[in-house]
Amino acid sequence: MIDHLWSALAGFGAQLVDGALGMGYGITGTSLLLTAGFAPAIASASINFAQLGTTLSSGLSHWRVGNVDWRIVRRLSLTGGLGALAGATVLSSLSTAAARPVMAVLLLLLGAGVILRFVTRRPGREPQGAAWAATRWFLAPLGLVGGFVNSTGGGGWGPVVTSTLLSTGPVPPRKVIGSVSTSEFVVTVCASIGFVLGLGLAGMQWGTILALMIGGVLAAPVAARLAGRLPSAILGVAVGSLIITLNLGPVLTTVGLGGQDTLLLRLAAAAGCLLLIGYAATRHVLHSRRVRAEQGEPGTSAAEQPQKQPAATP
Image (tube, rainbow, N blue to C red; front, side, top):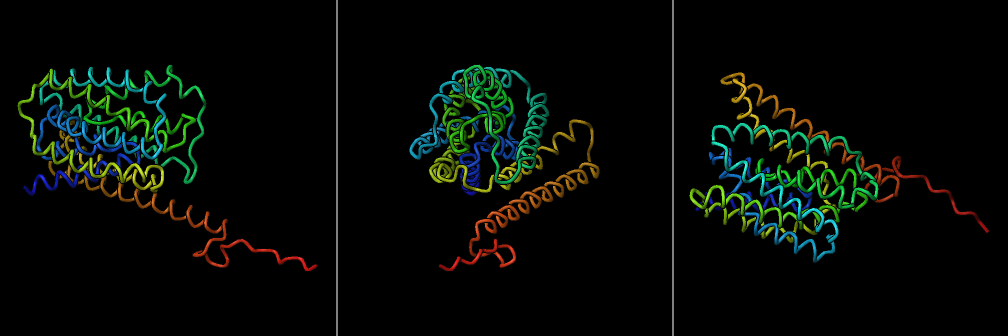
């Protein structure tokens, strides 16, 4: 019962981040399941089964608040589903011993990519892209790659697709997050079909899957309203740091390190991640203060507020 409660809380938190940022549920959830001892294919399949409910709820929630561009959804969904089906087939065919280090390395790279994405972006400024980034010639291959990575890595649709569109697309951030989250339902369905064909239903922890799903469904409406409104830099760096911390151990074991060396490297990585979170938080606070000072809002010091010229006497 306690394990299922923690799974539900993990699903709620992961979906809250995913719905608000456009990424995080799959790679966070899979990392937690791998840490708990799940086989890689089972962990990825479990997350995809849980996301059947969370992505549907998330898509509906984003649609209700006007965050969905259906042109983007259509162009991403078809190839994204094909990529997810192929990725699930590949992962299902690998042995546990071969799949675990592959997935750990992929998740580690995705976590680093998420951190890099949010650390290098200037506070308060979203990149302005070109119109070609919303065409099917760009979105179709992007969906294919995102779907494949999503299945083989147990997550990755958001880090690949959302990050790319936020960096290159001409669509507002909340529309990007809503459209990518909505198209993820099709990707999740196709990935789940691939895992059923490759693995069957044996070995699935349905209590854990249901708890993850319930937590995510409850968080989806809240997350949709927070899309584009939360301090994305802090959330993004925190999510990436969690993913790196959870997957660094298996990667170090794969390359032959162990014992005290592994412990020291993991502690150093954790410290580095905390510094990055602090850096992102500091940048956000300084930017917010600067904006308030420029607007002359209450809460800024007299020195920070722009000086007003006295009104001319008639």
